[in-house]
Amino acid sequence: MFPLSYRSPKTEIRASQIHGRGLFATTDIAKDEIVAVKGGHIVDRKTLRQQIAPPLGPVEIQIDEDLFIAPVTEEERELSMLYSNHSCNPNLGMRGEIKFVAMRDIRAGEELTHDWAMTDDDDYSVECKCGAANCRKILTGKDWQRPELQKRYAGYFSAYLADRIARQAMLAG
Image 1: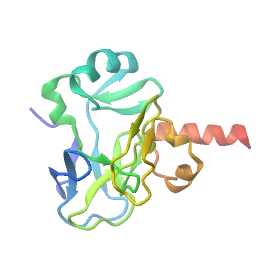
Image 2: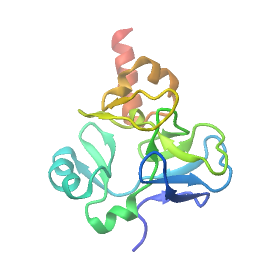
Image 3: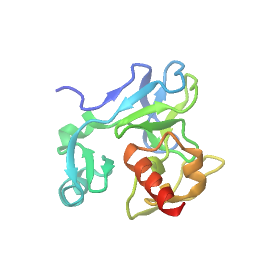
Image 4: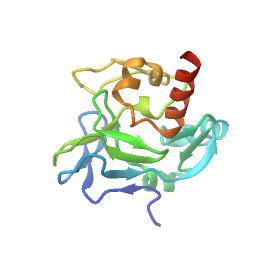
């Protein structure tokens, strides 16, 4: 079976200090270079919560208010995983809905991470164990609303969240 997601040939999966397995650079990666593209099926929130998440765990990327891209079977899970763990000091950001790019030049050996604030608009709160000096300690599905993160990640939010941020700014100003 073919992979559902793309991972750059400049990457490999190995043990991570952050969480289980992670994605690592095997050679230097230039700023704005495509590192990964999430693949899968487009599903709504109800399908994700009731049919996909219980057996597969957190495997999705949100692409609109009620739409997600995710594998739908155990066999597809491994074929769609990117292994980019969360970090409060990420080196990957979003372009569009499913494309992950380098936010800066990345050196060989670095773990490739993104901040869930760039992709998630959901109701959750979890303890963060990323170990970054600027770790927020608690992550929520609403962190994208934090002004400091909107400023820090400008140009690297998913298109869905970037549109929401722009609409909020128009209403506020």
